[in-house]
Image (cartoon, rainbow, N blue to C red; front, side, top):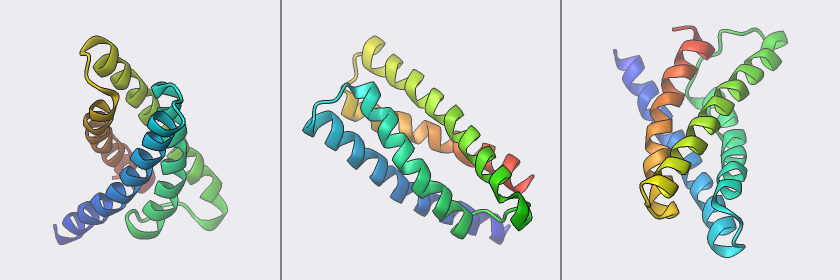
Length: 129
């Protein structure tokens, strides 16, 4: 039980850092450069996913893959991230265009939901639990 609590706390810390990176890149692109919010969302997600993979595999998850299978692990992580990106994009579209929530606020709400999805799927597919 202590291990899972520590893992959740580590995941939360890495997630907070990845979220800060995600939001800062999004805000810079959307507010600073005025890139469309969906394009900014995708770019920010990619940047934060690269950081997230590195930090998650170093500090959060115990890989069940051997060194010669790290590419497979990375591809699984990226595949799950793409699912997370699709979920993020759909939820951003719903919250901004249908619910009329400002993109800056919507991004915060959506990120919280997708973080739960990310932990559960990575726990299952990276660690095999």
